[in-house]
Image 1 (cartoon, rainbow, N blue to C red):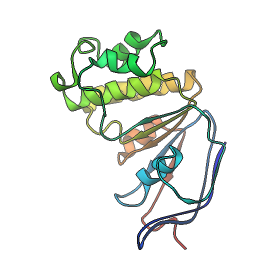
Image 2: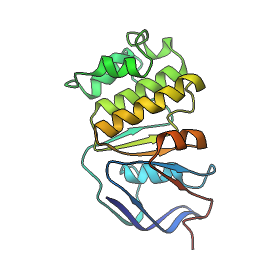
Image 3: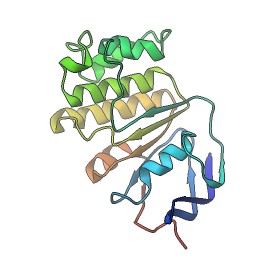
Length: 193
């Protein structure tokens, strides 16, 4: 279990978290919802070790994968090669991309596909790394609604089968209800005294 205790984080005078506490269960999908600016992405960045904070975060595994809001794909590699770049020994890359609706696009470069297709490739890359903890920041926002419903179910099954602990930030309540085992709602100022 990941335990966040007495978390404090500020950006100058703007206090984002003050004495914030949260437990994340192992092998579960936790969706974090809330308005813009309430600290959702900051929390993921803290868990990924990208920013400093005060307080205690325990139980983090060694293998963490992060799917950012921006896909961050390498422009000189095909979608499939982007996945294989972080996970050269992962044998199911093509099957994973097919499951995410990318079969006919896997040999194209990021500049040749839509934002939603790039985002799905970033999700495939995150899973192919075979993390113990998968962090995803608004990963479904640019994915077509009809494709997204099936993708959420397929992705949930993959994550559960691989026993990955997953934390997802989303604004979409329907996504959270389909995808999550637990929904944590953060309100602006929730982590403050």
